[in-house]
Length: 404
Image (tube, rainbow, N blue to C red):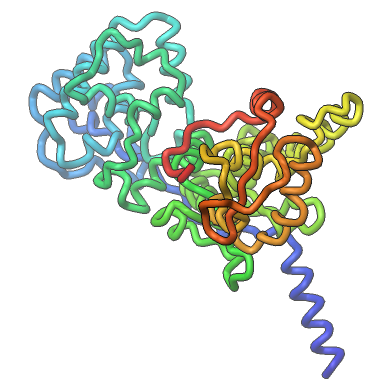
């Protein structure tokens, strides 16, 4: 009996340490472009696959048909892709036709540079699986606005700037449905942008579900640990036709930190946003280039120069960034851990992270706060050293969901 229990224990331990493979989700299929319902165009289009057919919806308004015909005459592929957008699949609104007209006008006068950029945007994702082109939808969302500025060169903007102008997460009609949103996040670049802007890391240390990903919970709350972030990314990418898995990458115990691995263009990549703040997040990185911590390069440089900017470890730097953001220079270990999503790491922050920052000269030794709570402490900072640290090692993009 003891031998059986021991064998069972070993099996469970091995399984816990192994990378977790995501259960494959059937990928989506592309929407059928509405231009198949326009008789003047339909005869010139390739035949639809046997498992697809033109949706039986209300006939398009004549003005919309005419605009699609004009766009088709300029660029047939763009007309096909525009017709796949959700706005034209059902419940067509006047603003959608306006956006189509403005888009057709832009394409007709586009420069070679703008055409190349637009082609690059449409190439994001796997065309044979994604329902539609999310970057193209984002362009239409900019064009539908009443205050649209014709002088801005929309067609030459990179993906991130297009999304900055169009993805308004406060609009619950567009961002409130789990399946609709995960359909939209149909490429690694789109998932990466969404997670870095929308989602925030929160530790599950000490909880039973610490190593169980819950992608829907991350979507609903915008908070989650590395398992939640990785499972959410994998769910989106599996729908979009990518092969994915969840793999452990922590140097001491793989299961202590996991990332979403996916295949694209014959190569493996890691998508790692399930970490505190943007200072530690890696985003998209080729598998062979990934390191959970960038300690080796920084330590080597620090040892040769004796420069504390490079000697301080990544985890310690995370706390330093938090302390730099406190205007009154008053904090507490509990507040640090809560804000950084590090609940359960209070002792480590107290005995390791803060002493490292003191020893390297970034902050003075904390003293009890005179006006705060019993756990609060005051400190001062070496402003010049902290500024050099920011320039050399910290580049945090804006995150609307962050509390600090």
